[in-house]
Figure 1 (cartoon, rainbow, N blue to C red):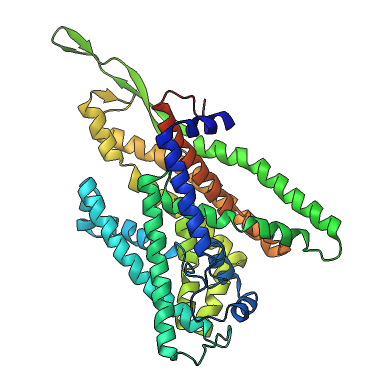
Figure 2 (figure 1 turned 60 degrees about the vertical axis):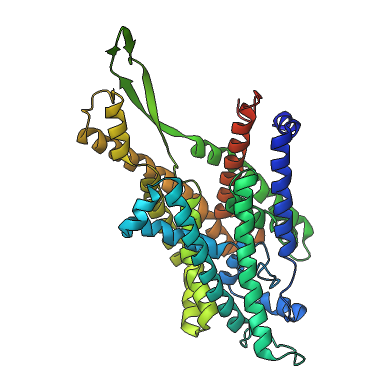
Length: 427
């Protein structure tokens, strides 16, 4: 691993991409500590400590930017929500579905609409947070030196501009850096909360420092033990054998080879967890907008406890099936095999092949979805009974996102290294 990283820095083009990615992520973390103009920072930070579970989880995904009421307080959530909406629209609106199949032109059109939708959602969230933080729960009071309406406009404009800037940084990383920019931003946000969570875990038991250290070490050991299992499932495949019929092309014999169709046990990666988290914590965003007591109560109910656990499990499994169906089309695969003279041994070409592939996908996706759902929910249950912040920071959702993003980024670095004949990360 270390030798591969050294090899990566020996390649000028790859080194520049890695340094560019790190610079953009550092800029993102800097923005998380720049407060919005006009906000009494210390008073707000004190009142935010008593916020509910839903707001704490939203703060986790912003890397602490929300608790600082920084220019990046909205985080990446508006963009993720907009992406979810556009993914759903591909299956609902025929025109959007056609765009997704038009190649680069269609993807650019979908990306452009996603950007506009992100700004609209960012505007709604910014107004909602402003109204929420001015309520009696947080008690933010503006200075009389500037008209209140002007301060409000400035805060909303700053938050929306921050959302647009995060979106721009994520796209820059994807285009000119290494890995998926939006995923790396979420990764950095989660990792940034780990040090403070470790100190909180050590001091959780109060005067018994030794017990706090022992509990913290135990949690870290369990997390490290789970990483190989998660990587194993992430890399696991169900391989469908494919044979190609022999045929004569002129005097040359073509075909006759054997290969396979690799179906990952967890084809959707961490996308189901991110989508499920956005939907579960969407009521918290609505509660921030409307500041209604019953909506706040509902947001807190589905953000913790047995309702949250059941809902999380169901949504993660459902999104695992949904996203897998979006990225893998059995009809297209069957048609491609038929055109290339390929067939699955013992299965007739055509509709029988489509049915067989669908059944395999259905059987493979279920254990993969249940596994990531269990990894996401079990730490939430432990946090509910212990209140240990380290379990929340290193919870199933967080660790799956971190491992998934790390593996994806290393794979992309690996593909670049192979162009220069290096061994890379995975031998």
